[in-house]
Length: 99
Image (cartoon, rainbow, N blue to C red; front, side, top):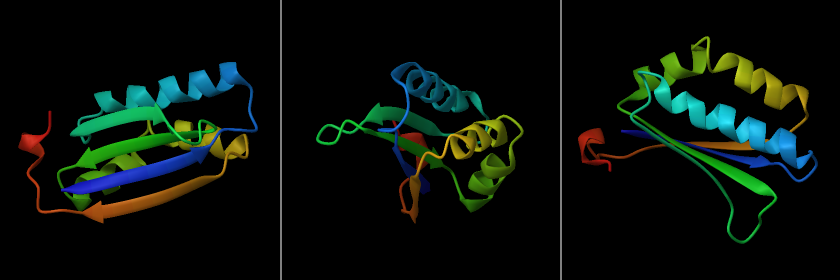
């Protein structure tokens, strides 16, 4: 299983734009490649929004990265100059065990 974790620094954008982007990110949960997805704000540093997404394998993550519904979200975030840090980790967990 692949955990795709992204930390977005949303401190420099308007709150309504931030909420819209967070909704767009949450909407990616509907993609077939996504086994599990959560979008939430950092508890200790609320200017940051986190995206935690789970994929069955690296092939599913690659398909997600190229998905036509994912690419416009990425492009919007980049166009707004929102800094992001990504971390992809593999674990032996079974996606069927996710809540």
